[in-house]
Image (cartoon, rainbow, N blue to C red):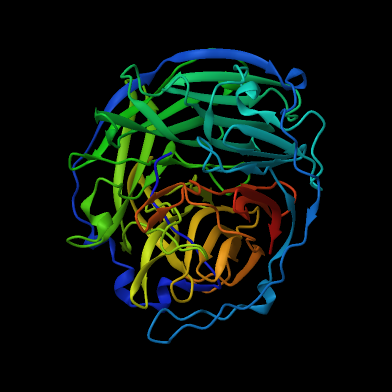
Length: 535
């Protein structure tokens, strides 16, 4: 729930290949790091079977079921040639999209940021924001009995404050998954899996103490899976004094079959994964879907540097590495393997501007905010960062394709196959990226955008495997924001608006991908858009 900020307007899509060659360092440039972690067990603290057909509908008024007219594709605006220049769009790569209005709530204390989760499967589209879950058919009609309070979906009292939602559809076993943090129990990470391919039926619900009995505070739910295993991750905030925290982490693996069959189990993993003594804070587990051209020899996680590392400020120099981790199970228990990968330079993501204020809207970065997607031997990911535009540092999105290498089944290294930066013209910002691939390897990046000439809006960019390396070849705005949200903090002339933590994207087993994010609907209320996008 803690974040740092960024936003957008018209768009230029740029790959590292169009910048200086120094942005793609060779593996030899990576320094040697001392990586440590503490083995731990997250004990099962809650188990229940919940029949969603018996859970009452959300008592607030559901949003009207209406289709949304996706905006026409347009070319990016030009920027000075001395800066990062936009790439021309390929006419053959036009993005098709249709969508509908999702859950919409007022900005209010405790739900200032919606966060976003989406899972698309044959039965329909599951969308979640903080405190609420909705289920739609593929045309955008709300299913009977939905939306529901997130707490009640998990069989908890309605008063429980459930945040940081994640959702996924598992093509291996035809199941829907949900994950939330329960702020009322302070340290319980809830995971739920549908017993069948229908979210209207029964769900197995599990709660885990991911702070491993330490009474520390987990934050920022992260969720991944492969054929046999579910992977969980969260920040684990260590309280120093008062509201002063040290950002930390915990990464966990669980047997998927046990969760799907309703067996009680424990999560095993590692706490305090640290680089040269400083803990990382956001270590994202990968998603491996069925039919995505191969599997991994264990459960993989990716991380950039966290907020406690000086390089994220650019002082004395920017960050130039990211980290990959592999958990494997053996006769003596779990092992954690790691490697550092050279990257183009990056720093934190600054706040974005809106029509109402300068550099005031929350953005998130440089952490990887969603699950890396494994397809055809590579891991696809994105994160926010700051990019110099004119005389300012503005929010942008870095995307990449990482090729891990293995020796005898063990993680031995990795390289960036390609990487690019989505940068908007002038002092405009791009932020909150989410991403996925479709069944043919087309790669989609959803992101929010805002600036002094644009209310918070939603964009998507995409590339085909055959496109020139380091480039995105298509983009379009999905919806233009109608208003800038009201500030929830001000001091003198300074104003700050908490806007969100992450958007969401989901592989779709039928066509293209599904995406969801928020936009400025009114000064007092955010709107969300759920859309099917395809090349």
